[in-house]
Amino acid sequence: MARIYETSKSTLALRQRKRFLLSQIKIHPDSLRASLVERFSRCGKANCHCHHGGDKHGPFYYLTQCLAVGKLNKFLLKNSAQQQSAQQAVKHYRQLQEQLEELSQINAELLRREENLGHE
Ligand SMILES: [Zn+2]
Image (cartoon, rainbow, N blue to C red; front, side):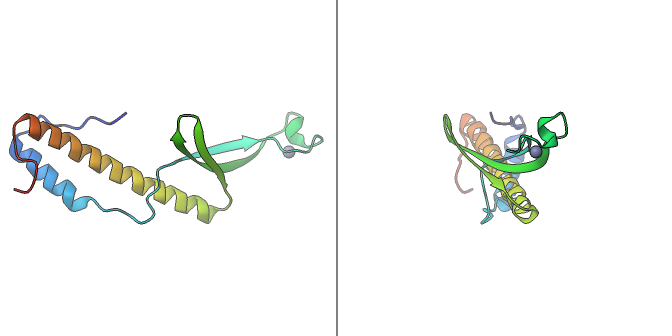
């Protein structure tokens, strides 16, 4: 579900916001559409404390990527360097996605006002 952006401004303000967005939009090479999840789990050793009321092991960090309904790409991020790369990559993708969504909503509003969407 998309965030709803403020598009009830004047056409001039919308155009200014659009120009600003276009100047900000950058595709980072590490862009990654995924989520990071933190998990605690029990190990395979039956005599371990984790099977006898003790703390579970973790946290473990996983990257999950939904590719289609019921098709999830998921793997363990093994070290903190990998976790930090993933965090940054996911942030870059989300930032781009939000900027594109706002641009799209502004363009819809400009179209509704019968404005030109291309170059001014
Ligand atoms: Zn254990």
